[in-house]
Image 1: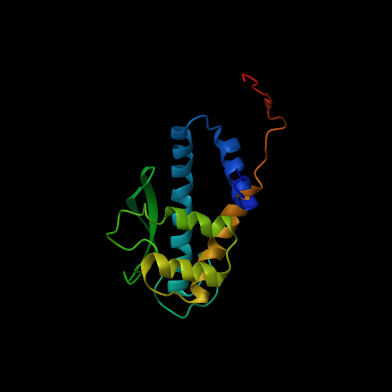
Image 2: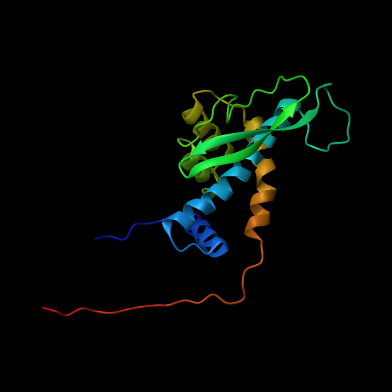
Length: 180
């Protein structure tokens, strides 16, 4: 039987999650994933808001629109690992209609694997746009994909650069069973 070939980025991300959360069971892993989904969804929604308004959060420059950010609303979304609370950005004139997690949609369990795969694989903007079109059935511009990924990258890099413990115990077991 051939060994399954895994994407090295996927393996590295899985190992970092296991190390960070000290998972010892499937339930521990599901809780770790719940912790990751919330900030990931929020970062994507912030990127979508940046694209909608045409400027970054805390941008002091002149804006093309009078519409501004207006805090966050609380929303619970259903994932495969349970309910996750997220903060959804709002705008003053109420014209922001999120495409990634639409208003009044609560079940996002079908998109989790695709969302994670976009980050893990380091997908190009075209690949991400294609994946979003596959998930939601609508196309998004490359500029919007760029705004969304740009808003998520600092959080991802901060998590990847967090300090690790100086020592990790490792047990290696190798044996043969010759009962024949």
